Length: 269
Ligand code: DGL
Image 1: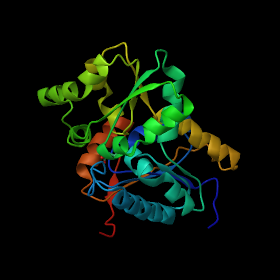
Image 2: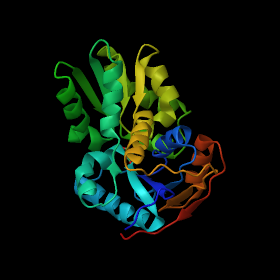
Image 3: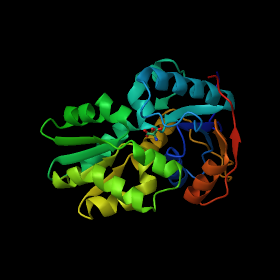
Image 4: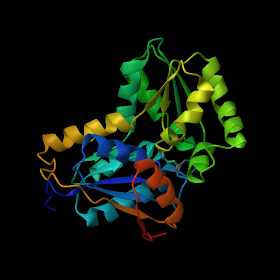
């Protein structure tokens, strides 16, 4: 497969979460085109087995490769934790996950060396963040917590409800009590509810999302491979979903501050 600089960046997630990474890609590389796939019919990925998530992610990567892409961003922590090396091995173009960039961002911030990490059941259960953090700084105290209901709050637009506040407190109060100064949002959906998370843990805790760091790494990889798009015209992004597009379009348009249209693609079941 020949790869050209004017090809798009392929991005995938189980739903709208990966759009937080797209937002940052657009900010840092306004001339790059994105082809996005949200597997909304099969989300959430968090409670699924690693084997199943790997299979879904590979199916999506195969689809993205039919769309003239030059690299893949697995903008989903659960899919990254399930097997980023596996996707890298089966692809001839660069494949980047979101866990290593998030770890770097957290290490750059923490002062008291007490770091919290929240994510889906799959991500926290895999120990991927805990291992990556400990490898870099063995003396770090790491408090991990799965927050499985957060993804559903985001996807169903329920963040501003009293129930969401109660759920947030029950997940996050123990982290606050442990005295963390940094909290990794180890799920790409969570930046979409960062207001509620910040309010719950308090202003003294720095929230770290991997979006910014991931986008800088995308830029570095493209530059290294001579694949940064030389065109200066405004890109036309494409959005695909496996479920019904309406709610994805509504949440995505709000986040990206532009009307987005998404097309439904039925993948193999
Ligand atoms: N946004 C995803 C993540 O970063 C997936 C959430 C899910 O589908 O459970 O983990």
